[in-house]
Length: 331
Image (cartoon, rainbow, N blue to C red; front, side, top):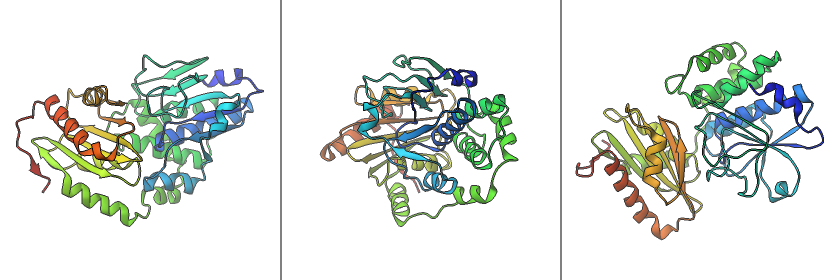
């Protein structure tokens, strides 16, 4: 693991930790864990900066309840010299704040290595693991440091949410750390994170999803239209995949001129990351894992939204040879 490499970092340069845009629990917890390791093993303070929004209620609760120190990315950051560590993402994928002309020093991720990924010093990428937080937990354990209760809670929740309680894409190491961290968890905090109050807007979007979703044999598609926060398509895709008879869910939503896509698959032999890149094909960027993937089509005018939705649905159905299957309502 990379723990020993942390002590070799330039002590005269501040450290900037960058998770992906609209960071999820895995990105947030892993970034916080690296910040903890930097402070304890190398005496370095770090800033965790993110771009986009944290809109999902559970994710907002994670940050608020555990008091995780996140800051928004500003143009000023790129005018300063930093040691840049990218976490739970890789550069130049369309889902990170790093400019095209900036090369990070370090990349730590559990997504498949991209051909475009560059770095100055080193990378730790293990696509076989269920979460990036598993990588960070391993490093903390190897360092021999006692893990604080709040950080243990964040890492536990990250592994739990990223692997759906070890039901999706988990390994023995994910399982082991899940159980090890469990004994350090602050359960009062965990309850607040997992059961936050939900806005009326959320329930309105659930109603929209139920009305607009259409089933094509084992595939459900849902064009949400305009969404109030960028994580919502993924949230709805997670919800729809558990409808009886469904093994593929595909959800689209437009947020601040960008179309955001989320794909979930419980179908053997289907690689969601490959599928979503095929669907987007020259329109945007996408990636992820075998079971879950996401994508983005940038700068999509509102007047083109319906046409693009139709194109994407048509491509999806063609991908699964369902073009001639008659659609049905969700219920």
